[in-house]
Image 1: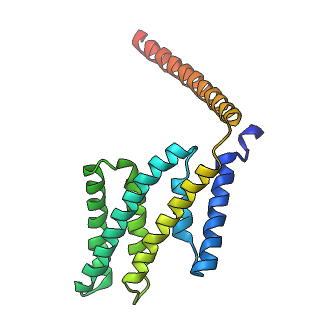
Image 2: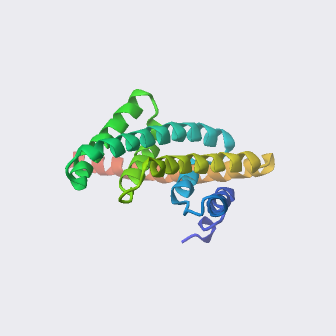
Image 3: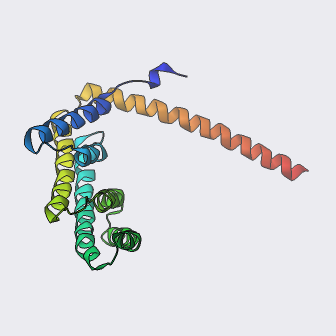
Length: 197
């Protein structure tokens, strides 16, 4: 075990701060638990601002799609005689539809966020909740995503830190490449031994 692998870097710190901000914002505004917002912030938080904005855009499209399908579920389930029957039939169909639409609009990176939003809402609607409940859950995902983007905007690493991170990442990649090369040589050796037999 290498102790240097156990480190708290900038992205880890930003993740913790994003969750803290979600808790604070929701505590002082709605008083609700910000589970969906915190998860959205963690999903959207990336190593730098450009990646966060790109991923955030994809996540917002996914959240909108997942939320829209959750709204559809909310209205259609009323026509089923049994809520379990609606859940077991509609939710899997909506997951498949969600994936198909995401692929169709070239939002492959937003598929996980779309399905997460859809499932978090459809499988957690308390009995008797209204349309407002669903809209507030979708809104939470937007809040978390914007917190992540804002954090990356205000905490962009300085060039010296960025260079150190890149150097460290390159060293890790070189070590992995060396390990893979050795594994490949071992496999080639086994194949040649099998051919000789």
